[in-house]
Length: 130
Ligand code: FES
Image (cartoon, rainbow, N blue to C red; front, side):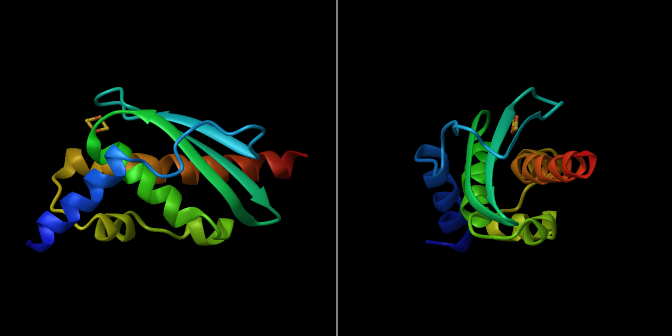
């Protein structure tokens, strides 16, 4: 099996059997975002304990790349601090997925990370207001 075949299989496994899929009761923060190009969606739910992500879940609809990536992002985020998640770069996630993606497919792949980071950034602003 080539590296690309192996990475495709990993992504498709996440798509077919997503990790951390479902709504969350009383999350610390949640956010629904759309890919404006296709209308596909990812909603992230985060439960923080102090500054750490104790739990993270998602629901969504869309292509295998966006939904498989959402599953991978939630796996990556659990147990990390808010700062660590805000420091994850698009390239880091694209490297983890490890597939050659064109610009429009990169947007699919990055939708979950963007949603999670916006969700946490918004929470920070709300905290400042309190
Ligand atoms: Fe819509 Fe991929 S085609 S997110």
